[in-house]
Structure formats: C-alpha cells, structure tokens
Length: 112
Image (cartoon, rainbow, N blue to C red; front, top):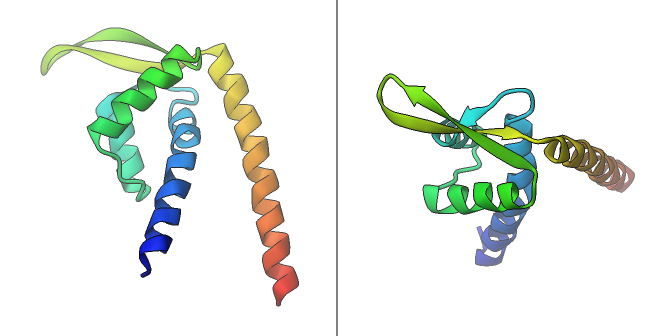
C-alpha cells in the first residue's frame, strides 16, 4: 500500500472519531477504556494519547459531560455522557454521514 494511501486512511479515521464517540455514548454513559475498546472492535485503533484529548475537546465544546462513579476495582471512574448539544450534533453528523454515503454510492453505481 502506498504511503499516501496510509495517510489518507489515517485522515479519514480521524474525521470519523468524533462521530463514532458520540454514537458510542448515545443513550449510555461510558468509561474511557470502554470507549477505546469499542473503537478497537470497529478497527478504529485509538491510543490513550489520542482519545483523552479528543474527549476533553468534545467536553469543552459542550457535547460531552462526565460524572464520577465509584468502582469496585480501584478509584472512582469518570463516565462520559452526551449533553443536549452532543445529541443535536450527533443527529446533524448522522444526516451528514447519510448524505456522504449516498453521494459515494451514487458515484460508485454510476461508474459501473
């Protein structure tokens, strides 16, 4: 695979991460390691050095909030959840994703 292709794939993943995090938190609060696990399962490998700044950025933008919950396995854990603004953003991104998917599908099917 060409080096340029790897760079493009990396940029595409970065663009999807915020949307994916919002989807993971839709309807359910989650601990950072749970979010990371879900992203890994989806082949969107993320390291802590990427995830935590992204969670902070989303929180600072008003899309996420967090609450501390006691843990049976050590210190309290920070659980992230969507705010109302996060839910609105998620809906807008879902619409944008649908539009992009339909555009790509149209281009792909017209090619044949």
